[in-house]
Image (tube, rainbow, N blue to C red):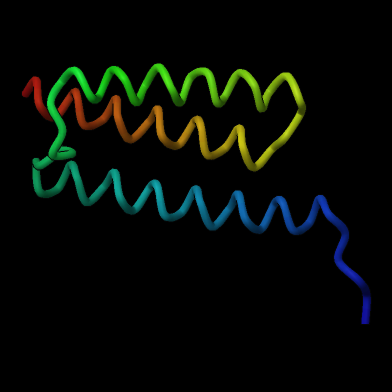
Length: 84
């Protein structure tokens, strides 16, 4: 049996994360309900996710970058739903 390398594991984890985030965003849009935080906390989380993403891009860590981008996408979607 062939042994999976590190890149394969990273791709599997990122794919699972992407599917979960897409499902979560579709569910948020379908129900019309965003996250239960105030607007201030949305921006705090977005700023934190931006720094997380930039740090992981600099270190070339794919999973950390995917987590940061996912967080940004979820928070931005929630802000858009709050604005509608």
